[in-house]
Structure formats: structure tokens, C-alpha cells
Length: 136
Image (tube, rainbow, N blue to C red; front, side, top):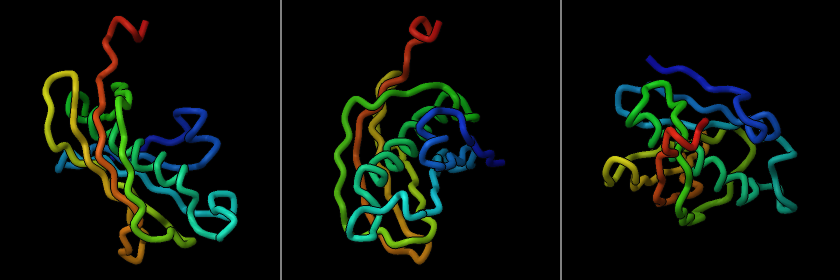
């Protein structure tokens, strides 16, 4: 059963994206309804926001490997983004997928799609679980 994480961080509150976790496939989703504030001067999704959505979906996917609620923190070690098509106004969704790794490092790919099915961007990255002693 999926559940949504809203307004957990300052970035989520500022930008307005939602993380959707708990899917049986182990993949977290991150979605955003695009508004004028999310667009660049060309009236398409700003690349930095696209990157943030891919990063957030990937980190939450890593988290789901150890916690179905997706709340265990994972940090980005590296992230490579490929921009494929412009993101037009509407809802965009990123989905992460584990491609490899071990206990503390995960290799995760993600795709960002527009609600009409257009592939906007893809990413590959390495994500590290935050050690418990660092959370205190």
C-alpha cells in the first residue's frame, strides 16, 4: 500500500513536490504539478527542478530497501542527468529503480515523465545510507 510524504523538508515545502512510497515494486515515485514558478524563461520545466525530482525519487527508492515508509535517509554520492525533452506544464513524475549495490551504497536509475507519457529526463546515481550514529 503506497503512502505519500508531504512537506517533510524545507525543499518539499518550497517547491511543492510529493514523494509516494510503499509500492510493492520497491520503486518510489516523486511527482509535482508544474506551475509558473517551476518553469524557466522558455516556459518549460527548469533543469534544476527536474534534477531534484529525479534525486528525490532515487533517494526514497534507496530508503525503501531498508524501510517501507521511505523515511530512512539516503544521501546522493553522485548523480548524472540526461535531459531528453522539455517539461511542459502539467504533472510530472519521477520513478527510481535499484540497479545494484550492497548494504550501504545503492546504484539507482530514475526516469522523469510528463503525464502525457513524454520522457523528460533520466538519471543514474550512487546513493549512501546515512549511518544511524550520524542521525543523533
